[in-house]
Image (cartoon, rainbow, N blue to C red; front, side, top):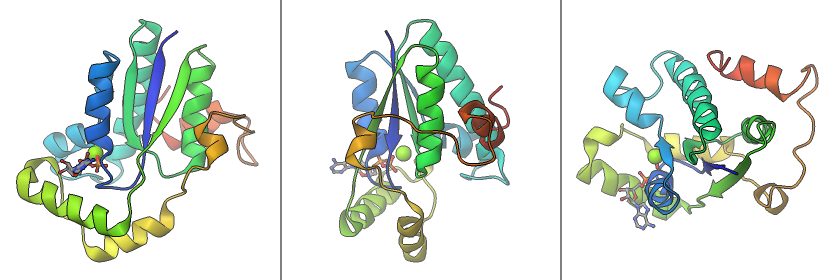
Length: 174
Ligand SMILES: Nc1ncnc2c1ncn2[C@@H]1O[C@H](COP(=O)(O)OP(=O)(O)O)[C@@H](O)[C@H]1O
Ligand SMILES: [Mg+2]
């Protein structure tokens, strides 16, 4: 059985650093959207292009699992629904999904972002203090049950299932 590791956490938490370690430990393919968005478009969002890029990376991740190779999807996934959808997609292939939550307190986050900006500016983009405060309010922290992989639960009301939800969230998935 192959495993998809999904990183969860705020910018600057240390997700990509952790993902690099996991890639070595598990001979896994690491897919980090920033490593595509920044070289391709010079910015992290580019008018919605991140969503279509992520859809293709998710598609590639599922193909990779089918080939028997572990994958690290370094999406950071702030939303519980996004995490549930990805878990559902992986488990419906008969494979394992593991959330890798990298928590970070505000001061550590600020220090890590400053460190990255000064050491590897080409791998990141400017983040203001106001961004950090706002992002913290948007982030849905995973609870213990979710991290242990307990039942996924149904798709949000109005959706036929997680596949339909995911195909809407990431239009290039299918
Ligand atoms: N455990 C750690 N201890 C100290 N510094 C770290 C740690 N993890 C990451 N960093 C540093 O913090 C910065 C942000 O890490 P990164 O992995 O890029 O975060 P993320 O992918 O969550 O945005 C980088 O400069 C990295 O070298
Ligand atoms: Mg990162």
